[in-house]
Image (cartoon, rainbow, N blue to C red):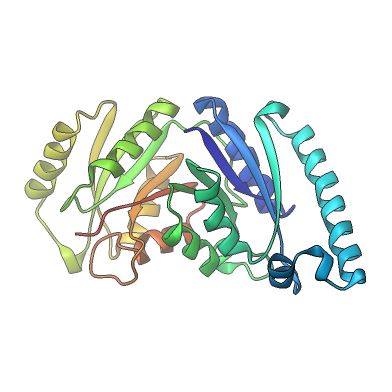
Length: 282
């Protein structure tokens, strides 16, 4: 986990995301990059034509925005709960969502930590559908952090799946997360009326999964509820978990457990930090 990217817009949720990223970076010995995106009508023209071809007043305005943002970010770094020399800052002009996705590749980011107000928020960029798009399109693992979640030591990580197909790369990322935090992995199958399977079947499936990947420090459970997304959150609450881990797909559509909508619904409604990474399509 070499570099952690934190989109930062000076909101409470982005402050919360940075606090959480500092906790992870300390465990993983990682560098942090704070990314601020200035969303401005002249952004596309600026990138295409260059500063010299923008109206002089616009030049002055953009320059002032950069200077103000640089000073504010420097203050954030100074106050952060992590070594100053391990936190870099970057300011970009453009569309926030597109810029974040592009920077993952450009900066060779290992983990994206993003604050979200969940599905109820209306006034910040990182709300509802935007968080969903980031989870769906990001090419690295993502941790979403609700503004109201407590930053606690990560001791229990819930991993929910249907265990019908496994992705070695995804599981490797999941187990790396578990090792970094020295956490217990709470493996769970959510059993619903619409996709009921027997306890014997589910238990064997999870035991085979544990054996295949030589997983240590774990529990296995079956949790009965009317739907998967609420069942995952309620199970995490019942066992007093500290994080939820889920797989998702970059493609659209449902049709497969955790193939997008379930993971994204959990991101929107969970008060727990949610770690997501992509599963390869069948």
